Every structure is written in C-alpha cells, then in structure tokens.
Image 1: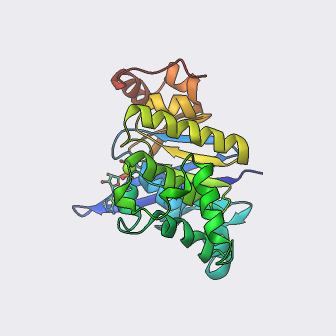
Image 2: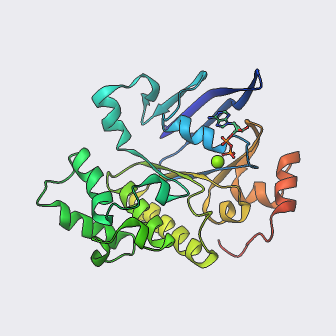
Amino acid sequence: MSLLAVSNLTKRYRRGGKAVAAADDVSFHIDPGETLALAGPSGSGKSTIARLVLRLIEPDAGRIAFEGEDFMALGGAALRARRARLQMVFQDPLAAFNPRATVARVLDDPLRIHRIASRSERPRQIAALLERVGLTADLAPRAIHEISGGQRQRVAIARAIATKPSLIVLDEAVSALDVSVRGQILDLLLDLQRQERIAYLFISHDLGIVRAIAHRVILLDAGRIAEAGDARAVIDAPRSVIGKALVAAAPRLDRSRS
Ligand SMILES: Nc1ncnc2c1ncn2[C@@H]1O[C@H](COP(=O)(O)OP(=O)(O)O)[C@@H](O)[C@H]1O
Ligand SMILES: [Mg+2]
C-alpha cells in the first residue's frame, strides 16, 4: 500500500475571467521511506500540489489517500491526529514561524498540541530534538530571528519530526540557503530518512538538488505531469520538452553524489 496516493487532482484559479489549472489531473503515489521530487519551472504548480496534499487548500477534483485513509473525508479529531503524521517545511522559516518566538517555543507547540510529552518532559524532548538535527540545547532560549538561516531550517525540520511523521512535504526548503549549508541540510534529511524511514515530497526547481536527494521525480509543466520516473534517469536523459529545457538551463548538475 502506498503511503500517499493522489489521483486526478485538479485545482483551477480564475485569472482575468479565465480559469487556469494550477494542477491539472495530477496522479502520483509515494511509498514509505521514499523521496519523490516535484520539479518544474516557476508557476508550474509545485506549491499548489503541496498545499493540496497538506489540505491547506481544497481541490476542484481528485482524491488523496494518506496512510490508507481518504484524507479529504477526514475532519475534526481524526484529521488532527492524521495531520501529525504529515508535516511540512517551507522555504522561509521566518515567515512560517513568529520570528520573535524562541526556538523552545516553536518546538514546544507540536509536543503540546499533539500531546506527545507532558509539560515536565517537554524541555528534555526539545533538547533531544535539537540534538537530532545537529543543534545544541543552548539554542532553545534564542529567538527565531536571531539564529542563522541554516539553524532556522534545522529548527523547522526538528519541529516537523517532533510528531513522528511518515511524510514531510518540503517546498523549496533548501532553495534559500548557501550552497554549503544546503549540502548539510540535505545530508540531515538523508540521515533522518535512513533512521526513521520518513518519506519526502521534495519540491524544488533545482534539478541538481533533486538528483542528489530524490528516488523518483515528476516534472511539471503548466500544472500537468510532463514526465516522471527514476530521478537520475529522467535528469540524465530527459524526454519531455520541459525536461530538456530544465536540464539545459541547470547551471551544473552535480553527478558526483550517489
Ligand atoms: N492563490 C492563487 N490565486 C490565483 N492564482 C494562483 C494562486 N496560487 C497559485 N496560482 C497560480 O497557479 C499557478 C501555479 O502556481 P504555484 O503552484 O505557486 O507554482 P510553483 O510553486 O511551481 O511556482 C501559477 O500560474 C500561479 O500564478
Ligand atoms: Mg512554489
């Protein structure tokens, strides 16, 4: 059974009186512990699909099954419980979190909301989460806006794994980082996946990053799937028009990571 199965997902937006499909009859699945990348040019529908999967927006048509359940039929307590298993990391943690909140507060929220640890246990759990993502507990009292971009993204990952998810949606999660920090965060994601068997829906416009981290890739073009398959096979020899254009535009594809 797939962890996530998306069928015929469609989402239209009105633009100038015309309906534009940001996602157009999109179907895919993700297996446990797998990384599926969504790649494509700006405006191709990557973030729309992420938001649909996370149920931040509702589709016009299509179905989403998560952990064997009809995810769109869930509501109330059942949806909250299932949401703990499906987490997200976005490009800009300064926008995702209150920048004045402390690191401890950002990590305390999911532990409290999902009743993962009692009040007295939570400081220890927060320290353990920080350690898991390569940070130290002395960061806990610092404000989100005071720490570096790489540290912030590690905190975002710590928050995402706090609820023991089976799937994390990462929308351009490393795109804003310097190359060296980006490599460290990708290594962290790979480590966590190996240790916890977490699956990733990894969204990026950068084929070099996709090649380094994803098992499979879907290339999107104007809301439609243009090409899909093994990440390296697709990126090394794209068949679709958009795939060829994206590869030609990629600055240097790092083929050394394997
Ligand atoms: N809230 C919205 N209202 C209207 N159009 C939108 C909205 N969100 C996205 N779109 C349009 O949907 C298309 C896909 O956008 P998006 O999913 O953000 O693409 P990507 O993440 O690949 O850059 C684009 O044409 C975008 O302008
Ligand atoms: Mg986007």
